[in-house]
Image 1 (tube, one colour):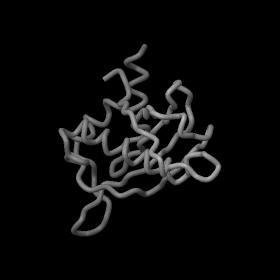
Image 2 (spheres, helix red, strand yellow; image 1 turned 120 degrees about the horizontal axis):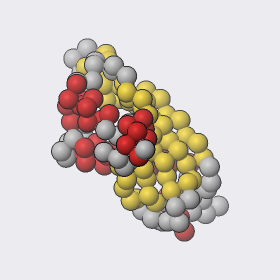
Image 3 (cartoon, helix red, strand yellow; image 1 turned 90 degrees about the horizontal axis):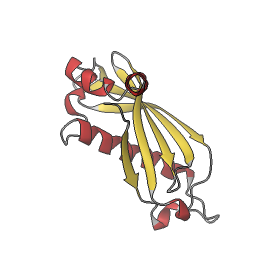
Image 4 (spheres, one colour; image 1 turned 60 degrees about the vertical axis):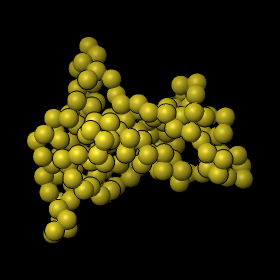
Length: 143
């Protein structure tokens, strides 16, 4: 894989606040939607494939510019910035219709053992798939 995963999202009518800006919490919804589309695309239509259940451990958002209704449609680029034994960091970069970066959302996800409610290792088969979208792999493939 030499390209990040990309998907297009729509700015919906109710996403904006009274100032005409997309409300800050919507950035997290957009990131979640892009993350689910990413997982479904790389794991044959399932939400997390062999990774199994995951929970969000941490979210970090960098707001570069305000999104507005005129930003539509958004292009969201999804990569894996870190792949640990039981967790991964998924990065979403959101661009407006002109290709201008508006925000970056990093989500740390932890694979969960549902029986014990504790972290569990990410299976090797899932790691291989996820590594194809790691920023390090993408940079190496581009050079």
